[in-house]
Amino acid sequence: MRRAPVAPPRPEPLVSFPPSPALRPVVARVAGLNLAYFGVEIAVALAIGSVALIADSLDFLEDAAINGLIFAGIGWSARNRARLGTVLAGILLVPALATAYAAYEKIADLAAPAPIPLTLTGVGALCVNVACALMLARHRHGAGSLTRAAYLSARNDTVANLAVITAGLITALYPSAWPDLAAAAGIALLNADSAHDILKAARAEHRAAREAEAGASMPAPSGPGPTGH
Image (cartoon, rainbow, N blue to C red; front, side, top):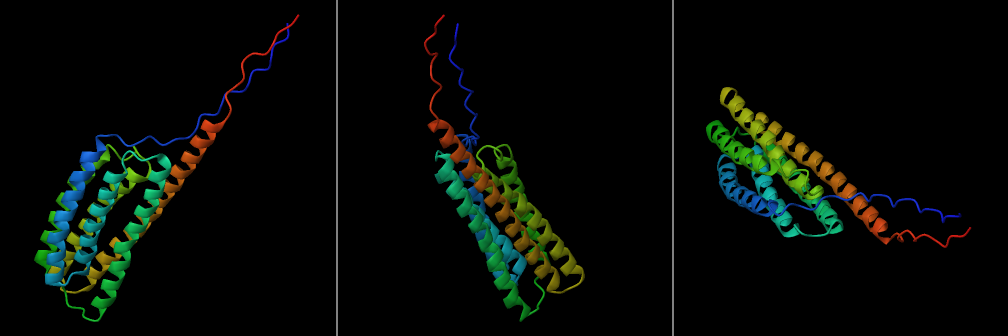
């Protein structure tokens, strides 16, 4: 008896999992916390002339924007989430560029910032960012570039806060503008590196979306053909 050839199984498309609905209220809370502390930190930064606090405050504003965009993007297709991830990578570069400009301006006036407000503001920022990172940690693998952007931003800010606190403690012992400038430079580099990570995640998500679409468009295997003796 002659049998028709069996079609090979269709390849399993590579897709990224959509964001969990539980992520929406989380990113809303994170956005609100970041926006509130941005106001606190930028006020202190301008009052004491700290470039590191300016950089960190811009991180809070950037985090508020990122989480706000993620809140809007939940429920989008994988392709649109990948496009939004590319936008978020660009947003992460903004604080780095703004910090570079603020540092350039600071070099003209190397007055040391007040160490106590610098340190205490850094401690407050660390508490806010640890809370945000803990809220986002269980969602960081759930939606490709979007949740990766939110998690990396919160994680980076905890590292940046430790740099600000260290700069404040060193400035208290050795009054100088350089610890503050060094912390600001580190924050800028950290943001640039995270922008690269998010861009890679967005590209991977875009490829997964294309493969999923290609898999969906493949013709279904044909049924068994006529048989004979």
